[in-house]
Image 1 (cartoon, one colour):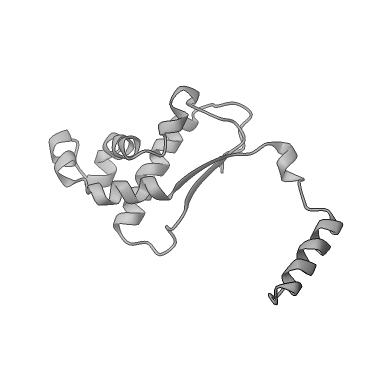
Image 2: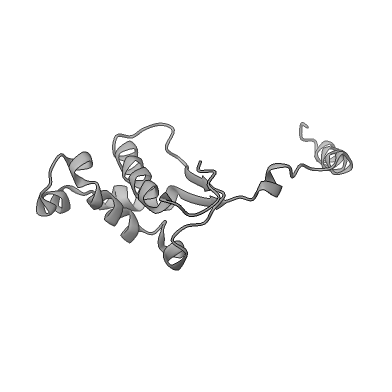
Length: 126
């Protein structure tokens, strides 16, 4: 989570996060079902829609090839990248932008009662 007021260096940090996600998924990390980047300040507005694409994941991983693959040689890094892991990371990435107002957004007690009554009516636990 990045609670910045402005975009700052989030793009750089996001790429590092994506590379770490690649390593975690490649290793079969059990807590890698959802890879969430939560921020209060959007970044890379011109490419926002592509930040969770396989192309961007591959680019971020190759940008950090020395840490991911232990090599500065781009040809070696390209030969080692696992495209199924790239696809997996892209599919699991979430980019969420919040506002300060959302932090205080909670359901009204009346709404909770309506939801609880509906769940009980359906025979589900509340």
